[in-house]
Each structure stands twice: as C-alpha cells, then as structure tokens.
Amino acid sequence: MAQWLDAKVAGRTDWNDHLFSLQFECADFPSFKAGQFTKIGVERDGKILSRPYSLVNGPESQYLEIIAVPVAEGLLSPKLHQLQVGDELKIMAPATGFLILDEVPASQDLWLLATGTGVGPFLSILQTEQAWQKYQHIVLVYGARFNQDLAYLPLITRWQAQYPERFHFVPVVSRESTDGQLQGRIPPLLESQRIQQQINLSLTAQNSQVMLCGNPDMINDSMNILTAMGLSKHLRRSPGQISMERYW
Image (tube, rainbow, N blue to C red; front, top):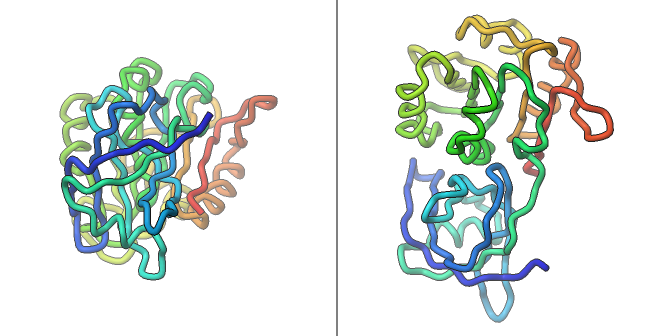
C-alpha cells in the first residue's frame, strides 16, 4: 500500500538558476527498480502538495535524488527549489513505473533518448550493473536548449572513461552552437542519421531497443520516425523495440 514517508534534504546541486537536483535521506524507503518514479511533496497547512519525479540515483545509492525545474506557475516546484539541507519533505513509497530494464526485451544495443529532466531515469539505469551486463553498446542521447542545461556531465564523463568502447554520449543542443555537439532536435537528427553517424552505430529493429523520456513532442516525433525505420512500440502482449514514459 502506498504511503507518505518523512524525508530530509541531505544535499542539493544547482546546475544553473533554473535546473537543480535534490538529494534526500529516507531510511524507510523500500528498494526500487532503476527507472522508476515516485511522488515528492511538501506539507503546507495540513495538506501535501506533490507531483511525480523519477529517481535519478541508482538503487544502491545512500541517498534518493531527483532533478527538477522550478516552473513559475507551478504549485510545488518553486517550493522544492527553495529547499535547503536539513529541510523536510515527503516521499511516497513504494516507487512505481515500467520504464525499467526488466520490461525491455534483450537486444545488442540500448538507445536512451531524453530531453531535459527526462534524463533522470536513464541516469539511474546507467548506475546499475544490469545495464552493462545486458547490452553491448549503450547510447545516451541527451537534448537541451542550451549547453548549460546539460546536467550530470561529470557522471556521464565517468561512464565514458569506464566504458570507452561501449558507452556513447550524444549531447544535442537546440538553441546554440557548440563544438563537439549536435545542434537541433533529436527527431530530425535521428531521421537524417546524424546521431547514428556521430557514433558510427546503426539503429535498427534487429539490433536495438530504444527508451524515450522527456518532452511529449520529442517522444511523439521520435516515435513516428522510429516507426518509419521499422521499429514498433513495445508491449508485453506484443514485443517491440520502443519503450517510453511521458512526463506530462
């Protein structure tokens, strides 16, 4: 049965003035699968304001972690943005969701396509041994508006060093041009094969599984392009190559 648990902020990272991560401790939080999400909330006037967030941390991590953007008109995210170390918050247990590797069919390569805070569940997945044992190549395509909106680059760089022949990172920035990065949106770059050419790796129904998370337009457009490439949505009753989670 789902229940609210008490948690306390143990740390925070401000990637810029509008993108931040919170680390918090909750000794009673049960084990979860990498890629799952839960509800995070703050209590005000006897009521809990909450919304779902994917857990960024790996299942073995000491602290729970989320990445968020303070939405100006939002009821919760500006309050989360104000939290400091030692402040209290609420977390719903257990975590849930099916954007997990247990639900993804076996394949040679795993493609993780994310925009914005949608990178969160993929960072959690990449912190597991399961990911590196299950796939020969893992590709993380991470889209953002500006270079400063790309979070967790030190962690991503560590994977590049640890798995130089197996891990491929493709940052995509839509509103500025930066050396070494693709400019534009993920779907057209997939369709033109520029992402695949960047890492010299093919994306086909025969050798790939694709996971999508982030902006609905990215998910819808990528789904159309991947379908045209011969891939199909994965369902338990009808196995395919595309798994997704919609953030809003």
